[in-house]
Length: 475
Ligand code: NAD
Image (tube, rainbow, N blue to C red; front, side, top):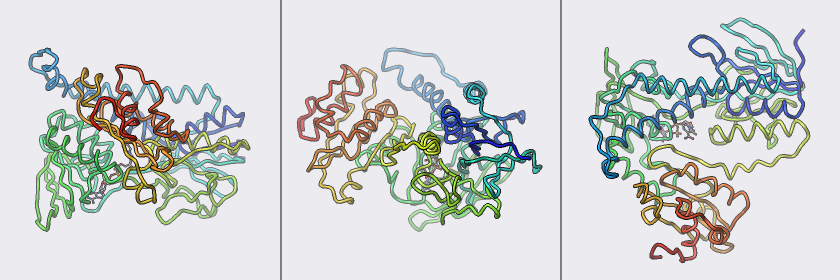
């Protein structure tokens, strides 16, 4: 007889574990099924984000940035160092320790919230029953009044460069190179390609990024993407080839040869490692038995309505496995919302106000529409920008690159989007999200006192610039 729960959640990534905690807070008898294992075969909660995604990549981005700054930036501050070297093994061990601390922290939270954890792969059967299996053997069956599927996503594998886990790797493999590859190829100039390409570039790799389309970072406001492309290529030495179509790859014992076409020319380059970062796909293969009748959409995502409910009443889905951007914070907020919906509450989650961050140096962050999107949506636009080069705190920090741009509706002054390229963009974006959430006008930010000297004054000045009255630049 299957054990009965109010809610069974499949997946303990940022969407699933947050949904589980919120369900427990709301008084539901909750179980959560997750199959991620660490090197010892023990459960390791937190999904892609904690195990092989956001957290370990940020640990390496931070370590590699310190290395790069020590080498190149300290002299400007009058600090001289001897020969600077890097111990990759130690760097990776620190990254692994950060992951272990956090995954164990999630396990502690699940326990403290009295959530029943089940280690194995969950599969939805008919009648809201979830079968759990490990190594192909069924270990238990859980029955629930409500099921939440939070099964996440997987890297897309392309036939022209199949992941072999050694020379050709995905994001997970790229976090564990034991030595710095001399020549590193990256397929895809998206979020992962740029973040992990930056890590190894800073540590000494010669990095070539092959991007199929000929626009750089299409979702980013054009003014910012042009500036950051120059910074990455001219200042940091990333070789980003736009419009490069990879047609084949061949591995030898120690190298991988990649053939691509660029402007009708066929080129073959040899790399010591190749990262494939061409997007992710929903992890929905074999997630439900045919008898359950779960409906997927044309892109393999679980089909949901505006209440996150699938075509099966009482079965919900959230996170990377459903429509919308594949972002941890989007999944987590959906986790909170779905738990509250199951409890009969009416939470509001505004998918239009989800921030994006790319953790390169400088960082890129945005929320809402960029200028072109706003115009395409029929708005008459007033845009204001302010460069960090004119911000006192940024100059004191030796961080002169980048700008903040505010896109506002010319008729109502309501802010439609805010775009940041520069130091701490990932932190500064929260003011922008709050502004959009409260339907603020640019005048609201312009009339808000910002502490001096801070980077956030660039936000204040960008808001003033919308109406041509920035104080520290010529409008
Ligand atoms: P992405 O969608 O950001 O970028 C993939 C890039 O690969 C695109 O520019 C695409 O044009 C290009 N591409 C696709 N096929 C190609 C091919 N055959 N040859 C060359 N280029 C090709 O995907 P990603 O970087 O793999 O990241 C996956 C997901 O993970 C993203 O949706 C993102 O939301 C999420 N993620 C987010 C963060 C963050 O928030 N900082 C970090 C990492 C990952």
